Amino acid sequence: MGEHDTSGEPKTPRPGRISAAILPVVGLVAVLVGCLVAWSNANASIGWFAYAPLSDEVFTGNGVVLVSQGTQVGLAVAVTGLLVLAFWAGYRIARNARPTDH
Image 1 (cartoon, rainbow, N blue to C red):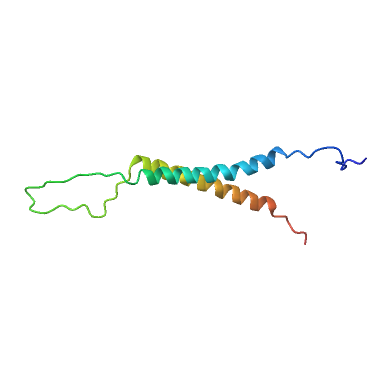
Image 2: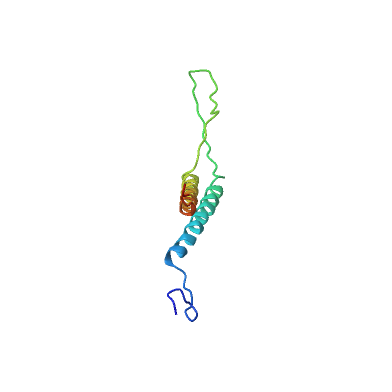
């Protein structure tokens, strides 16, 4: 019976592998939830007008973009999820890279 003999012992997953599998799932869930929140709040209707009687010009709000706070929160959560996924991918690539002996 050597130290590598596992004939009667069941293999248990290492804690590092479990947490390494949870991180991309959490990142993906954050991206999906953030996109859903941003999309559900994107249909916010904002009405406003301007009256300038002395200038004799019509005011138009071209190029004005108004984003609701719910959309901002959703996009922030989605970006955070993307950052988590990018960190996980970089970590996995760096961990799997082996230095070559020359």
